[in-house]
Image (cartoon, rainbow, N blue to C red; front, top):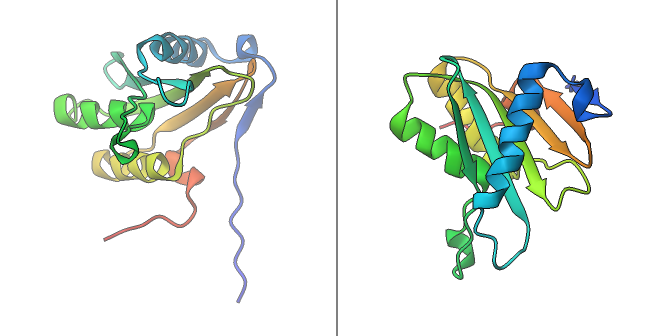
Length: 151
């Protein structure tokens, strides 16, 4: 038996054409790139999460000379959220990069972590991937990883 999984997402040719709340979150993610420690790759990534309460948290990638110790912006933010604000679910997560010639998509580890947080909080996280003046949006981070790892 063959099964098909279809990915539905929104695509915006310009950030200006996005809804106000999503534009604001992309801007906060862009601002967060300034706090990245990316001395090795030169690729600064910022993430911004909108919580149900309206609060916005930000994070950025943190590189280490010991490469496996490096953390992406998304996981830096998600782990901080889970440690300090787990009772205030994440509604949306925006990702931006510097340089930003193209949209910035989460790596596989970040995709799994987003799905883990969705499962723990019992609700989806809208993921906004921006760059190059455009953005793509999925309604749930789990959509980015069709075969999730589950214990």
